[in-house]
Every structure is written in structure tokens, then in C-alpha cells.
Amino acid sequence: MQISNQNSVSNTTAQASTTKTPQQDYIFDTVDEMMQARNSLPEGTTTGIRISSGQSIMHLLPLPTPIEASRFNNIEMPGQTLYTPEEYQQNMLGKAGQRDTSAIIYLDGKAVAMHDSQGVTSHNAIDTSSLRNGGDFNSLVSQLQSQYGNRVRVESFAPGNGPTNAEAFQLFSGKDYHQHIAEQVAGMRQKTADNQRRQLEYQQQQFAWKNAPQDNVFKVNGQIIASVGEDGTANISTGNLLYTIDSMGKEREVAKKLFALTTGHTVSGDDLQTFFDEHFAGQNSRETFSGEQQPTREDISKQANTQYLSTYQAMQAQS
Image (cartoon, rainbow, N blue to C red; front, side):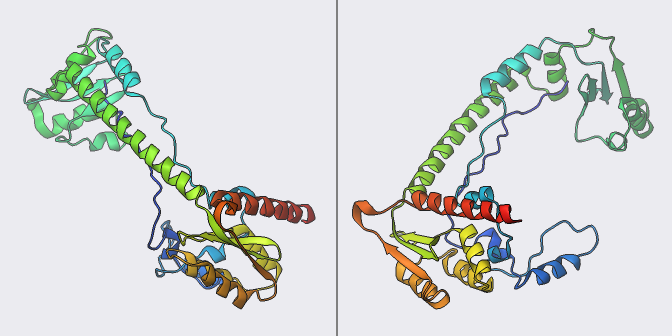
């Protein structure tokens, strides 16, 4: 028998950052440099390469697929897939009267391990290395007997003749089975309420982010590259940016500078104008909006993604 705590619900809440992003922890000036650093790691290393902090490596990315490009601007919160409190309660109460236990190991008269249809459950106080080394319940019995001699006693049961799961749980843990389930359900319900609150907060943040009015939109050769609103948070179309730079024969260093200017910083329309005038003089344009004419950040993102989808499909057709 196994009593599992099903109320450990993982929840990831996206939060806006005013400092550096995870991408900024890694910096390479060229793809060759990145691969050289990667290849210099000891064999078997699987962790990332921390080079420095405070700069972006987004400019080193290959051209993203349209789906990847849209995901840069749309982080979705994962849904919940575990038991509901009611499902957990019904499942566990339904097992209370079952007799799944086939053997119990006692040490000095205290139950320290038991075997049921799910495997072996044991107290942390005993050494279970035989199980970790591929052994079975009998291996554990032999191990404990060699360690503790006649202090160990094993009680075995014919199928269906052992204690109920509720009785076995109380014998093993010292807690009432039904009280334990009630406590677990209460905890799950509290976590569910907390998750729903965080989900609502996240949805509100996403709504505010997507609907933030944009008063400046910047294009290069007609491709939307960036937009910014009164909040000073720039929205960059990574796909359009990288494609435009590559197609114009410019160095990716230009993209690196734009990410450095906007990531973790607030900028104004004039700040971006200065950047585009410096790096795309004669090929850039700026559209300004005010009042009810202002598009939302989501509007601009959708237009940019549509542009990039068309560009990507054309590239695929030529390849």
C-alpha cells in the first residue's frame, strides 16, 4: 500500500522582469565562439555555459519558425492536470477497505516496511540500499536480518487476508487514515484556491500586457521591428529583426545592440528612433499614434507575426 500526497501542484507564474532575463546570463560574440566554449566542456557535462551576465544572446539565434517567433511574445501559463481534491478523496477512500498488504517487516516491534501491490514502503530510518541496487522485498528482509538479527520479524499474509489499507496505514504511520485523507484534501483545496488566484492575476497581467497601447511603431523596409508605448517597454519582433539584418548583409551585432538597449530597460520612442537612424538610415520608418488611434501591443505583434509567416513561407518555397 502506498499513501501518496497528490496535492503537490506545480504552478509557474510568468512575471515581468525589470532586471536581467535568463538569456542575459550567457554571452558569446559569434556562433563559433559559442560552439568552441561548448566543445571545451568536460565529457558528460550537461549544464549550460555561464560566460557573463547583463547581455543578451538573442542575436545568435537561427531564424525562428513562425510558431517560435510568436511564442517570444506569448508566454502561456500551464494548465493543471493532477487530481482535483474530490477525485483524490474518492480514490483514496475507495482504497481504504482493500487488503493489498502482503507482508510487514517489524524492527524491535515497530513496523518499518511493508509490501503491497504497489511495491515496498519503508521508513527513512532503515537502510534500503538493497532495493536501490535492484533487489526485491526478500532482499530487503535478508539485508535487515543480517544487520539486526532476531530484532527483525516478518509477518506475511495470504492474498486478501492482510490488514485493510486504512489499518496498515495507521500501523505504519501512527496516523488515522481518514484523518490523513481529510488533511490532504483540505490542503489541496487551499492550493487550488491559491492557484486560481495566481491564474487570475496572471491573466490580468497578460491582458494588461497585450492591450497596452503603443504610440510608436518602427519598421525597416516595411517590416515591423519594434513598438513601444507609454510604459516604456519595447516589443521586438525577433523573426523580422533577424531576417531583415541577415537579408541586408548586416552583422548580428546590430540585433545584439537593440536587445541590450531594450531588455530590462524602459525606452522612449526617441531612444528607438536614434537606434534605427544609426543602423538603418534611409530604410527605416516611424509611425506615431495617439488617443483612440493607438494600436495595442497584441495588434502590433499579430501584424509582425503575419509578416514573418509570409517571409518564412517564401524562404521555405525557395529552399
